[in-house]
Length: 94
View 1 (cartoon, rainbow, N blue to C red):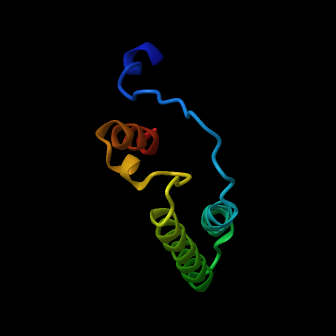
View 2 (spheres, rainbow, N blue to C red):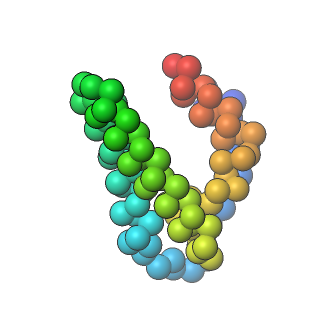
């Protein structure tokens, strides 16, 4: 199965060390953690609304913070590649 997708996404090796992006790690962890907690424990509409809003706020902050960095944790341009979109759609449907 993996051999079908080999060569679809090119591998790239880093040549130097990258600084640790603590703010980006914190924002991404908060966005994903709140989203997961909301999905798992959201019992009321109010809890779902607050959790979704907070998760979106941290996710938006993460994207804005990453766009300003020379070496982002997750390059926003990656999200627009057809191969990554296809894999994401495949994972969602399974």
